[in-house]
Picture 1 (tube, one colour):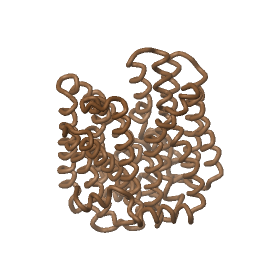
Picture 2: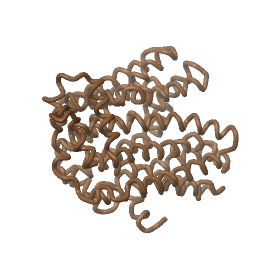
Picture 3: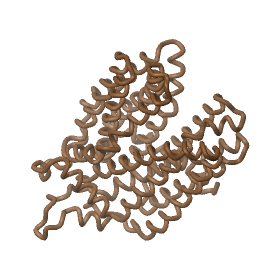
Picture 4: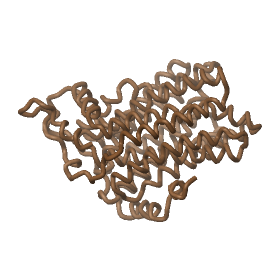
Length: 441
């Protein structure tokens, strides 16, 4: 690992100071992140309990597949519409609604019986998640001072990843003294608490308060996708991030078999998952310091390269070396994701921002689904190291192509117009008003 990569592999002093400054100076952000932290931990625990309950209600691998896919399907099919909702109406209200939806869904899972009711409620929870992500990511700039936006975005990602890493351990501990039903109900309660707190926090006013009222959501969703497709830099990020997810997610399928091939068993698998998660958190927190957009682009590319390099290193038949490789891949995932989000917040106009994040969410969800299927097929035909090699080399190829496509973009800092709402969609010349934004991004 290079010195520069090593510097990014853990939160540096000024990154930690920036997050502490955010918590100390921004009372609204402090309240939001306290509520989000407890719901993120609950969500990490809740999905483990959800899988356990699904398998108890139908003793088939399909039960696990169905509830896991239910988290992705709403964003896969309706992501741009979710983004249009968050660009049209109050983002805070959308976030509150999504928390209430997930509270009802997880509490419902704990109270009902039968696999199909469980799957339906898992789909409802996935709908809440699909609404929440673009709304909150687009609303963060209205929650904090612009100087502290990188710290807020990094902390949001770090808490999300910490929930996914620590939450399953909490679920394992909780299920030694209580049931999986109790864990999912407790998860629903964390979302209810979050919804109540967000009701009292002022942020996320409607970005399209005036111009978009008369247009339908589907039209706004189509306009958003079209505008993103005309932004060369953002279009490249969508494709590159989706490609990186496609290859990196193959590791999730192969991770258990990798641990077994190294003679580590279930305990070793848990260690590998924890190491990857810790790397993910560290990578997410590395973006707290404010830098220019061009540097964000370089960090983004470095993250993809770390993913590829880490997966290739993990091929070595040694548990410590494989663990190091997964730590690198985890850091790379976090670095890539946080810098992708920071770039979008800096260069995409506010009126389009939620739809942009929804496009990333939709493309990433499809990439996850394809990765799960393709990794299973490759595993059955070859083996775990072939999957890691394909994933690693594929990620390096994504890095190389993206490096060429992004060369020369964002060398100049975007002007203040990127933060202003867009004018109405139709201009006198008949062009969409997003064309100017597209030329800048």
